[in-house]
Structure formats: structure tokens, C-alpha cells
Amino acid sequence: ELRIMSAAPAASAIEGDCRLMRSLVLALAASVALAAPAAAQALPDLQGRVIKAVTENAYTPLNFADPKTGEGRGWEYDGTNEIARRLNAKVEWNLVAWDLMIEAVRQGQFDIGMDGITINDERKQQVDFSDPYMTSEQFMLVRSDDARISGKDSLADADLLIGAQAGTSNFYAAVYDILDGNEANPRIKLFDTFGASVQALKSGDVDMVLMDRASIDGYIGADPGVFKTVGEAVGSDQFGFILTPGSDLTGPVNAALAAMEADGTL
Image 1 (cartoon, rainbow, N blue to C red):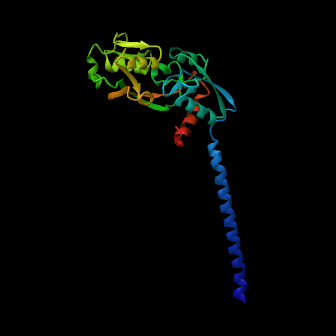
Image 2 (cartoon, rainbow, N blue to C red):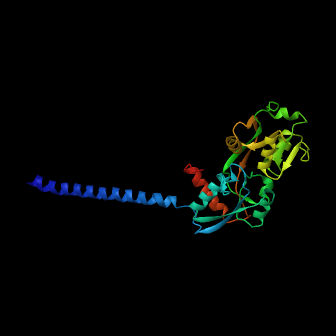
């Protein structure tokens, strides 16, 4: 009887401990379930703020006009729209020519700009940059039936012409990494848009255009059999969004980019 009397409280205590443990486990599971969406919501909340974004619509496949609808398309559209979605903001899209874009963002006409813009010290004097969203290596794009160009050394021929858009990384790579460092070298033919230089290559008005791998894949995919790439990469750059100096958007944009990289979206 003594043993039974003493065992009963022990069994009751064990049952109580089990109930307590079950409660603790359920509470922990609930807290984890609540913490997961909380972590997902940890990005800054811009409370529906309208972000004035600007691009050029002339740098396939980062930004371009849909040939059927005329609507803006490309990686930079998708990336910026996703950043805004995560920050609870809205994007107002605008277009401007490349040679005006950096100054327009610097003056605050637009909040954020993009056009495959290489991050460099000179531009950092004018605008703020986001963290890099893409690494770009410049390659030579030539016509698929052109056997004269196989690499940088092939361009020693004074008759071969290079197409470029003024003020771009492609232009500077052509001047300093391939030719003689003279920005007025007549062998570089300048075009108002990047797409125009590619069209000139296609028509035979120039013999080579430098571009990053993403753009090469875009142009070759859109026009199979017309172009090919030759030689090794000519330099490596990083692309970033540009923002008005001192912008309060730089931190939130970088936070969204980091989240997009962490979960694989980028």
C-alpha cells in the first residue's frame, strides 16, 4: 500500500511533466511559425512610396521595348519591380537617353537609374551606387561569317572598325584595352544607342562590338546565325543601380538586393 501510495504521485508528476513538455513544444513550434514570416518582413517598409525609375530601353536584355507591345521589358525592369514589391513601394517608369541619365539622377529628377551601368570611381563622384547586381565581362561580338577577328591581336589591322556608344564601359574598353588609348581614334565609330552599334555590325558598317555576356546571349538568341563571340574576356565590371547622392533609398535597395541574393531570386 505504501508503494502504491508513493507511486501514484510519481505517475501524476510524470503525466504533468509530459503535458508541460507538449505545451512547450507546441509553443516553440508556434513561435517558429510566427518568426518565419516576421523574418521575411524584416526589410524596410516604404509604405507605398512611389519610386521614380529611369532607363533607356536600348540595352537588350537588361532593358528594351517589347517589339509587339512597346512595353518596357528586361532584367532591370524585373529586378527593380521585385525590389519595390519587397519594400512595399511602387515604381513609376521613365525613359531618357543614356548621355543624360547620370546627370538627371544626380539632380534628383529620378530616384534610381539603370542601363547596365558600371560602378567606377568617376561616376561615384556624381551619384550613389547600389551594391552590384551583376558582374559583366566584355566579349567581342562579330558577324558569324567573319574569319578575320579571333581575339584582341586580330584588331591590329587598321581597316577593322569598332562600334560603340560614347561614354560606356564598352567604349572605354575598346579605347584602352584594345586600341591605343586615344578616345578620338577614328577606328571607333560612335552611335547614339547600344542597339544602333549592333545594327551597324549586322549591316557591315563596323566589324566588332564589345558587350557583356548577358547582352551577347540576348542578341545571339534573338537573331540566330548572325553573330558569334570570339576571343577571351576584355576586362570585368560590376553593374549597379544609380541613385541621387545621399538618397534614403540606397539602404533599402541594398537590403532588398541582399534578400534576393539570399533566397535565389537574383
